[in-house]
Image 1 (cartoon, rainbow, N blue to C red):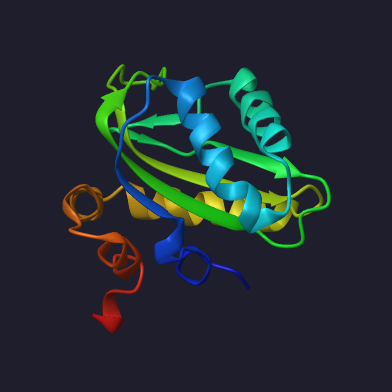
Image 2: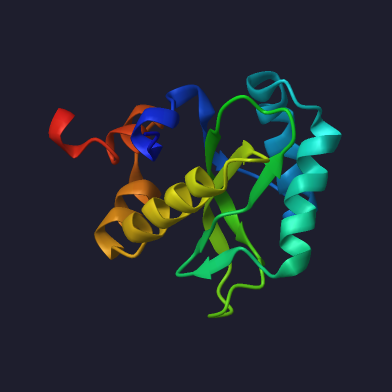
Length: 151
């Protein structure tokens, strides 16, 4: 059973990333994810855009979880980006987003996709957890937030 703690690696974390907007963010995420997943940058961007066209993946509270399903992907990939400055994301509370988790899952992995989204939503519902992500000094600090017993 996969979980965010087992999928998020320090190399998948970008801190204080500067992007011009959502399109630029998706391009930078795709650039980072392509070598990790074996999928092309174009395929990743298309997947993220397709999901976003259904409705914003901005949750509110400064958080977004853009996600996509990709045919041929062997395993799920999780990326985290802390944006500086925050960007508009059409979140329900109208606030800009600075904490972004990106999930890329195999096209057929419905249960895993929902499990990972649920796990992230549960963690991100905590103001203390969001603050830990917002103030982490480095990528290891972000990863450690999902493994509090290992600190």
